[in-house]
Amino acid sequence: MRVSSSQVVPGCVLLRDVKGKTNRPIIPQKTVLTAEHIKVLHKFLIEHVEVSERLKNGTPFQPQPASEKEKADHPNHSKEKIVDVTELSFRDHYDQVVEQYKKLFDSWRNNLPINNLAVRNLILPLIDRMDDIGSAVYTLHRFANKKDYFYHHGVSVSILSAYLGKKLGYQKGEWLQIGMAGLLSDAGMARLGDFVFHKEGLLTDEERLEIIKHPTYTYRMVEHISSIPSTVKLAVLQHHERMDGSGYPLGLSQEKIHSYARIIAVCDIYHAMTSERIYRKKQSPFSVIEELQKEQYSKLDIRIVQVFVDSIANFSIGTKVLLSNNQDGEIVFIDPKVPTRPILRLKNGEIITLSNHQDLHISEIL
Image 1 (cartoon, rainbow, N blue to C red):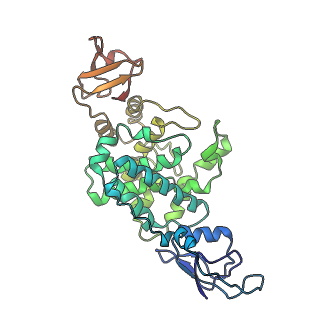
Image 2: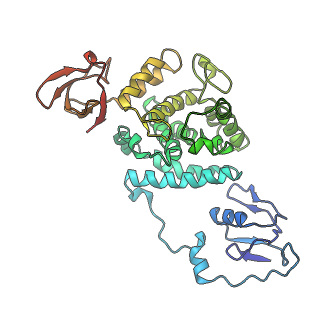
Image 3: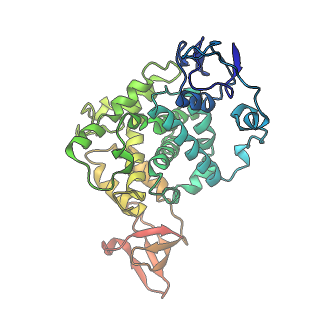
């Protein structure tokens, strides 16, 4: 019998596969539904299912008419106005995407397949807001919090990767793919234990060995999805590879690493180091940039790092900044060779050159 998904109960037996938008089975026929299966039906916005007239225990299944409350609670019967994301501020849009990404990731942890259409519909409108992203790159790290750092990281790496791809001269279709790869790059973490998300202390050797498997897990999750380009699949597999061969999971080096993966590598490191995490304090974006510049001659792609630095540290004369000693200053001159260490005028009128004060760095743009 065909019933509303709001009417099924644990013990119902499916007579036909339940398929998502990709036409792949979400729940196969003959499955005996549990409470978790019913949650999945609602998450995937499944309106109707075909079930047996008898429950698994042999008793007749007598679906009750859907109440008005059930209709209202069911996602497909919601009377709420669908929010037009173009009407949202960039920050509100970002927060909405983080919440939705969290739900997607939870579905992956429950062994559901990646729905590429859902991923695209979620992230592409956000990374298409390039004007807003250009204004937010200085403050993106502030959006994250300790509790939901992982989900903020996925969305922010996507944003930064697409932004950097555009700055590197890629066409729109390509930098959108780079952004997609950035969001999916840590999907394989769904196959790891809870320690990845909640552990406050240092990881054990066993846990580190488990974590380095996540790019391979991600690749396996996307490998057979025909609508995901091979370039994106390579990017998620290789984003922890390093130019000197010291990365993982394959120890690739130089030209063997796809350019998309090299872009994501830089953005991944930058956002991780600038964000507050359970087990590590955040660092100033500008001290992290200096660390990236040191790494560029061995582990990272020199050109990609330089374009990233130029994009993030794109100050203008008169920009107000906060120093690591809590003093306010104003930029009066920028040396393009060391953009993170400009000449500043402090509030007391003193002029200092940050290049001569290695113990100081810019903490924030005011």
